Amino acid sequence: MTDNINPTLIWLRRDLRLRDHLPLTKAVESGAPIIPVYILDRTSPEIEKPGAASLWWLHHSLSALQKAYREKGIKLILRRGPAVEVLGELCKETEAGALFFQRSILPGEEALEQNIADFCERNEIDFRRFRGETLYDPGEIRTGSDTPYKVFTPFWKSCLEEPEPGEPLPIPRTIPAAKNDPESDKLEDWELLPKRPNWAKSFENLWQPGKEGAGEEGAGEVGARRSLARFLNSHVSDYKKMRDYPAVDGTSRLSPHLHYGEISIRDCWHQTKAEHVADKGAEAFLRELGWREFCYHLLHHWPEMEEQPFRPEYAAYPWAKNKAQLEAWQKGKTGFPIIDAAMRQLWQTGWMHNRLRMLVGSFLVKNLMIHWHEGRDWFWDTLVDADIANNSAGWQWIAGSGADAAPYFRIFNPVTQSERFDKEGEFIRRYVPELKDLPAKHIHAPYDAPKEILEKAGVRLGKTYPKPIVDLKTTRQAALDGYEKVKANKDD
Ligand SMILES: Cc1cc2nc3c(=O)[nH]c(=O)nc-3n(C[C@H](O)[C@H](O)[C@H](O)COP(=O)(O)OP(=O)(O)OC[C@H]3O[C@@H](n4cnc5c(N)ncnc54)[C@H](O)[C@@H]3O)c2cc1C
Image (tube, rainbow, N blue to C red; front, side, top):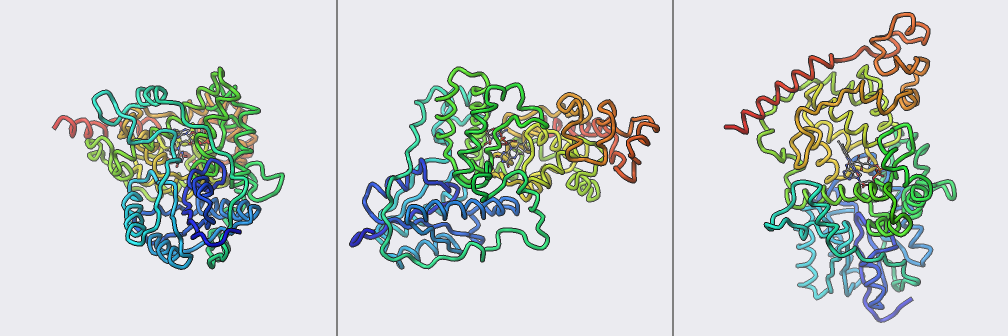
C-alpha cells in the first residue's frame, strides 16, 4: 500500500487486460497507487452502446478482470453514468493526481476524451492518453499524395513498411494499491446477462466463460491467451487453406477478445511472428489482422461510414422492405440450408464464421434486397464480437458500397457456395438437424431433391423445413437491375 501520493485513475474501455497495457505500466512506473475503473455509460451519445450479446461477453470479461486485479491486491471499480461526470466525481472523491487511459479509435469518443482532458487541466490533474487499440495509428498511414487509403492491399503494404510494432509489455509485477478504495457497483446489479428468457444459455457450449481450466475460450485475458495459444499450436499453419470451411475449427475465434482488448493486437502480432515466422498460414492470419487495421483506418477517416454508403451513388439503390423475409433470415428459416445453419450458429453461439457472414450478408442485401442497415443492426445485437468498424465495413463490403468492396455484380449463390465450402453438409447437419438424414448430394438444396429422398430423410418441405422464401435466379436479376439505378446515380 502506498501512502501520501495521490492515486492515478486508469479508465478502462476496450482494453480489459493487464498485460501490454501502457496506461497501467506508466502509472505503475510513476509510483502512484492505482485505481482502475470501468464505467457503464448508457447516456453519453459519443460512447458506443454494445448490443445484447456483446453485453453478455462484457459481463464475463469484467468478471475476469476483477479477478485478475484482485489477485494483484487491487479493486476494480465499477460505476454507472455519463463517463465525463463519473470520472470527474471519482477524481474528486479519490483526490486523484492523474488520469490515464488508452485512447479510443472511435471518432465520437475523441470529443469526449477532449472534455475529460479539459476537466483535468482545470483541476490540475495529470492527463495522459496512450495508443494501443491498433498496430498502427489509423491517422498516420497515408498514401504518397497524403490522403487516407481506400484500398486494402496498398494500405497493408504501407503498414508493413512502417517500423515493427513495439514488443508487448509484461504485467507489472506489483501494482500499488490505494489506501482507500472508492465505492464500486456490483457487477451483478448491472444485469448485463439475459435472464428471462436466458437466450444466451447455449453460448456457454462454445465459450465456456469463467470455468477454471475448462474455460479454454472464456472471456477475459486468460481465455484470450488460451485462444491464441490453441490457434498457434494447432492450426495456424493450415489457416490459409482451412479458414473458409465453416465445419472446421480453422480460425482463431479471437474476435470478441480483440474487440474488448483482452489481448493486445501487438501481442497477437508478435506471438504469431515469433513462432511462425516463415509460415504461409501465419502470413494469411496477420493479413486478416491487417483487415481489422484497415476497417479502423476507414472509420477514423470516414466516421459517417457506419450510416452512409461510402460510395454516395449507392444511396439510390431501391431497397425493399419485407418484415416476413427479414424475420425468416434472422431466425434461420429461409429454406436455404447454408444460410439457415449460419444464422442459427449466430443465435446459438453469438459468433459466425467469416465465409458465412459474407453469404448471409449477400443473401440479405442482394437476394432479399433488404437494406444492409438491417443486417448491421441484427449483427450488432447478436454477435459477441460486434465492432463498429469491422461490422460497418463488412456490411458495406457486401453491399458493394464500401471502400474496397465486392463489386455489385458479385452475388454469392448460397447453393454453390454450400457445395464448395460444406461439401458433405457437416456444418448444415450441426445447425439444421431437421435435414441431418439427407444425403450430401441433396442437403444444399432440399427443394430440388426427389420426393422419395425427402421422405426417406423425414423431410417435409413447408412442414419440417421451410420451402425457399425466394427464387435465386429472379432475385439475382432484380438485384442487378437495382444496381442500374446506382450506376445512373453515378453518371448524373
Ligand atoms: C458482414 C460482416 C460483418 C462483420 N462484422 C464483424 C464484427 O462486428 N466484428 C468483427 O470483429 N468482425 C466482423 N467481421 C469480420 C470477420 O468476419 C470476423 O472478424 C471473423 O469472422 C472473426 O472470427 P475469427 O476471430 O476466428 O477470425 P480470424 O480469421 O481468426 O481472424 C483474426 C482476426 O482478424 C480480424 N479480422 C478477420 N477478418 C476480418 C475482416 N474481414 N474485417 C475486419 N477484421 C477482420 C478479426 O479481429 C479477427 O478476430 C464481419 C464480416 C462481415 C462480412
